[in-house]
Length: 461
Image 1: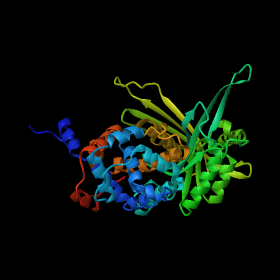
Image 2: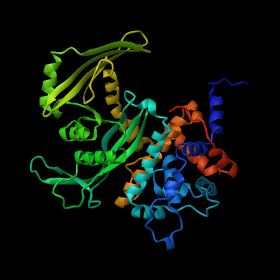
Image 3: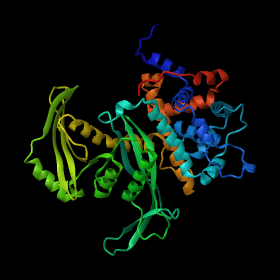
Image 4: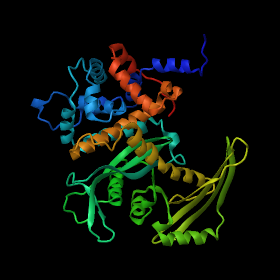
């Protein structure tokens, strides 16, 4: 019996033929040929007399834990404790053989001493390699600016103080004013490069108190200032357009964008700057800079109305604004329209807005939500469960988080760059389980390594 191209059995046969671990190594070697060397070059503070496992073995083991969807360190040790895994780690790193893989205690002890800057250097290398290959140019805004979204998210929370760097929130009784509950937590601020459906971590700033005795807690805006300074230092010549929610639509962030010669597009809401909001409402009634469009896509009809204003006076600067409303009607099976869904977005920007670029500015501004969805939501709920503490030591916690960001770049490139995986439209969780299955059951041989190091054709990202 013959099976058509779209037949389920044919797809299943194709799916079974793919070795997902080999596909992962292909992607890793194609984009980051020196990644193994970078893993090996981290500064190791351990007493070398007692070292059994080199840094690259430890770090690659954790990366494989992450890309194969394992959450806990205990489960990693159990699932990776077989000959195929030991062989695959050795072959991937260029070792002739390994006797065992490191236990999770050994890994965590290493990460407790490792400076976070060592992992940041590895991520810097990966991002620069992607820029150098020029495979992502089509994602630049107006063929010039790289869109980098910034946003914060809570990682861990505790009912008791975890460390001197914890932030804390007190819940008081509304009547008596007495503190009924105190929650201690850790928060992270991310800068992520937005590339279509992909978001790659470029820089991480932990929102943390320097000591327990600080008079004022660290906050997201202060962390954003530190993050922006580091981003400018690391990528001095990069044409950046910063994306963010309304929290960042404030004078300190505007000033830094001016100083660094960056563009910005921030969501804007009335409560953020009432005087600016009123000024926009007045001018909007006087000017007529509009871009309207109606179109149908499948069963949905889109009605878009856009108004833009340049050079609105605000304090000691001029701000450009874009007010965008989209109404979507969906036809049901009986050809009648369902209740319309209307969304409104107002953005502030320092990009001069015209009829030609107004919709591009809106699209870039709206893409900020990808850091919440493809970024934090996927990492929390689908891929890695970043809210799970793999170690309670604060330094190790930070390093585990950074290794997830490194792993996530590789995973997204695998999902978007592997033609075989892309063709089968495999779900994220299935890819994780297939990687783990291949990693545990299909040891690489010397011929595999030779082929995996050859130049390969990557699907357009």
